[in-house]
Image (cartoon, rainbow, N blue to C red; front, side, top):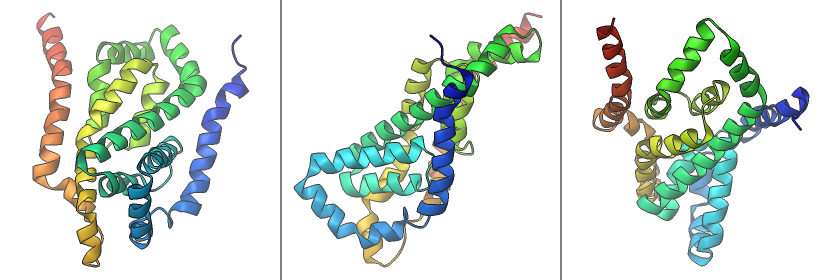
Length: 237
């Protein structure tokens, strides 16, 4: 039995409400200052209860992403600070992917189902958009993840609203966020020394040419199949 329309919208409504409340209540809490003030306690918990700490970190990060709460960058850096580059990156990617999937499913169950049905039955522009996205689904999803100008929550919602498949959404999210996760996690690896100097981490390093250049190169590589199809299509005219 299908859910009634109001019930299908409840998950997305709850996420939106929590996001608004979290913006006003947590934006001054989930900060690097909070991390600096509690660094010794966090490191002690990690050393004494590693599995518990790792599970709690992933759960908190999932909640941050799923409800679009402030502090995602701080969480990513914290992963490197607490767990090192490789394990921290793995935790960051897993948590962000789970959280993103939660938003995707909530949006798809509500607005996404209605919009996808309209696009499917439309004979005009909407249907052409639907067909174009279907033909280039993997490339578009990877581009959404690799281009840093696309807000993370937008890359979670848009695929749900146009009927993207869950499996492709999940694996392209996990793969597409790895480059950015590596950068933020690596910043966290040296966070202790930054705190010892009385400084805050410089997240602008993400935009350094030697960092952003390769990421944009990967985005261009993901777009290559779309370009090739477009060129072949023109050649067939």
